[in-house]
Structures are given as structure tokens and as C-alpha cells.
Length: 167
Image 1 (cartoon, helix red, strand yellow):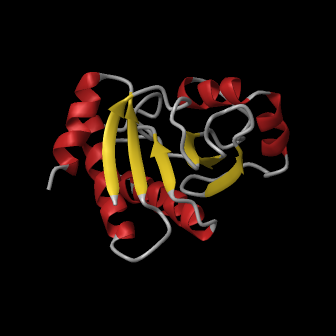
Image 2: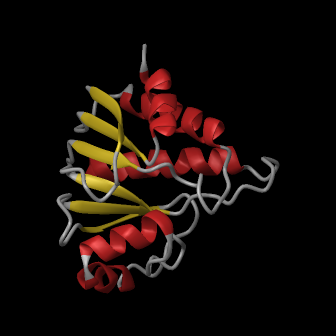
């Protein structure tokens, strides 16, 4: 099992799947969502139109189209409201459902962005802890996934994940 953090644009990794921190319409937006839609091309939008949106915590998959990744797993992260509305559990479900969908489709490699830490304002340190804990819990059982990468925008974000991934 290979777990790592990279300072990288989420659209770059050559993985079986990358995860999109999507909005509920799945029709593109800003940040990670906009970057993935732009890099994948208009075919991604056509695929997303057939999915009837996505609720917070759900995960849905499309082809990667013009991306190096074969697939994109779209998940909608929670908006931070002070931590009193189940945001941690909702974020945990995003990671678990994304990993489950990848495993159900026999995928071996997956890259995640920092879900909900941008426009949704989830505290970075808490989000990273939840992401790594969710990953470790899911991967404790046998599955097809062999490589997981956390794509981080900054060196500080990457360092935060590297500390959490160090045994």
C-alpha cells in the first residue's frame, strides 16, 4: 500500500481516478471543481448531466475524458458551520464513499484534493485528520486500492498530510 502527499494540481496525476470536490449540481464551479471540468473538457459536463446531481457525502463517477486519470469520482463536501451540524461525519462519508466506489470498480490508484477546505471553509487541520483516518479505516479491509495520493496546493498543506501519514 502506497500513501503519499504531493504538492500538485489535482488534474495532473496519472491515476485510475481523481476525486472532484464538486458542487451538488455536478455541472462545474470554482476551485478544484472548475479546474477538473476545464481540464477534462466538455465531455465531462455531458456525463455529469446524466447523474442528476449529488448530495453531500455521495460519490458518483464519470470518465476522465481529457485528463490523465481514467475516471473522476465526484463528491460533495460539507460546508463548515462551526462544527455543530455533523460536518466531520459528512466529510468522513465523502472519503469513505469515494474509496468504496473506486474499490467496487476495481480501481488501484486514487488521488484526493483537500475536500471542503476551500470555499466550504472546513478547518484545514481537522479536514486532514478526518481524511487520513477515513483512509486508514477503509483500507484496513482488503480491496483493490493500492495507491492513494493527497494532492495539496501548498507545501504547508503537503507537510501537514505527510506528518499524518508517517507511521
